[in-house]
Amino acid sequence: MTERIEDPVAGLVLAAGGGRRLGGRPKALLVHRGRPLVEHAVAALRAAGCTRVHVVLGAAAGTVRARAELSGCVLVENPEWERGMGSSLRAGLDSLDATGARAALVSLVDQPGVGAAATGRVRAAYTGEHALAAASYDGVRGHPVLFGAAHWAGVAAGARGDRGARDYLREHAAEVTLVECGDVAAGYDIDTEADLRHLE
Image 1: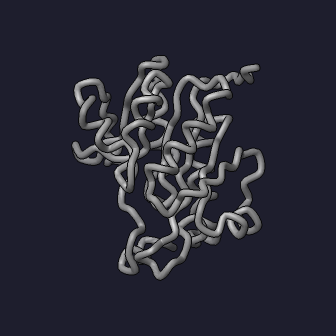
Image 2: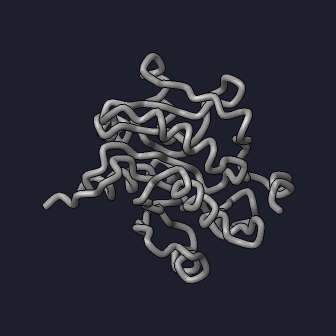
């Protein structure tokens, strides 16, 4: 039986990365402003209006569950997280299939510069299950990305390695609504030791 939810847009946080270039520190647990990054990502989605948030965990999933305050979230463990972000995206979309959600607003756990303002702008681009939208930073496509449910199967089919939905978005570039967010957010990633300077 399909679960009915009032909000058609579900938030989806990809938080499974092991931080290979960060000495094996799971990105979800990196601390920013006193709390793990995964909490910031969830808070941004909720502030943007997503009442349902799914979080895909992988590296140190048990520790993330224990240390991060993720009450009210649906936690999805990806046993194949080491194969890259594509596997986490597939796991997350699979977890949304039975919820009644008509779109997924996908954010990355390692982008603390993307907050509620940018997330809310992209969420506002939802027009139905065929919606396809992404944040843009000075004209360059970034995250978060909104996928209407009509796109989920295609996105999942092409999500391999660390490419996630990149190929799908490129192939459907004419359909993607770019939502400029450079004035309210910074779309950097926390990938290397040098990037840790962004954390407070």
